[in-house]
Length: 383
Ligand SMILES: *Cc1c(COP(=O)(O)O)cnc(C)c1O
Image (cartoon, rainbow, N blue to C red; front, top):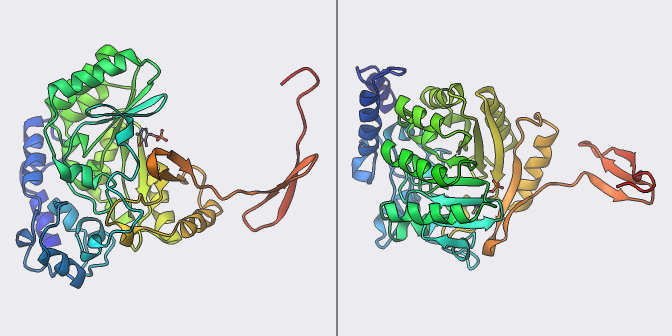
């Protein structure tokens, strides 16, 4: 089967990990990217589209293309409801658009301060470094933006953002996102990070990328060197299912961590992918075992054509409540929703505060048992 072929490929010369030959490694990720499946005719014969997948492929007029690296594809099972397959295979459900779904579900347009810079919170800004991805996630909230008119990152767009950051020193952190920023080549990445660092020596970088999950060969020795040169720099990945923690992917994360780059993870809560306490507990525990800190669990955004992947918000709250008493605080991310119309991210925490009286607050533990904690007050003249 196909899974086997991949194992064989890995053993070819030039597919050796940990080699110092950047050139060889660079060739590998570019080749893997170019060999991604971009249409059903690329798939191996053993792949049989399901009913909903077939129905999508037969319908003209779809606009959000698909592309999936072979390695990630090989993780998929035979059923069209497989948790991996649901993330990369389009299906007819995408044609169903709810009246509250939009092409700009986070209301980002109103916060665009330059062509590629979104400044929504006072102390952080987000730079859209690329309009391309190694894999097009079906749940993507920027799917309409990316489909609209992908264009290469221009020098003038980097300069415009750098000039804004220079004049807005209240921005302490720059999220480099996309698309996937790590799909850019090394020179472009080094160029954009240094342009920003030059005008703002103090800025903290946060690279938001799914590449360690879907194209781990991209984490080359030369990329590690570049990223290490721009610390403080955090990498935020997106693992949505424990199956995605393959040997190659974990190796890529390990390389980041061993180079002193902290790795955090944002999971998107997805129907039939990970809307289960067992799957998420397994995922989060495995993530910390590989030194990845679960940061956010996101409620699905109201992106057009993604309702079949969304989990009812009350079910999300219930899952988190159950996880809270089951897994460690370190393994537990913050469940949050990015509010429509530009409201920003807010945590969806189940409150453990039952009521507050004159002198105490009544809290409930995970089993519903009540505990009182005194309110107290600052001593006279203080606080
Ligand atoms: C998510 C996001 C951030 C970062 O928010 P955190 O809560 O700090 O992770 C910043 N800017 C924009 C536009 C975002 O969407």
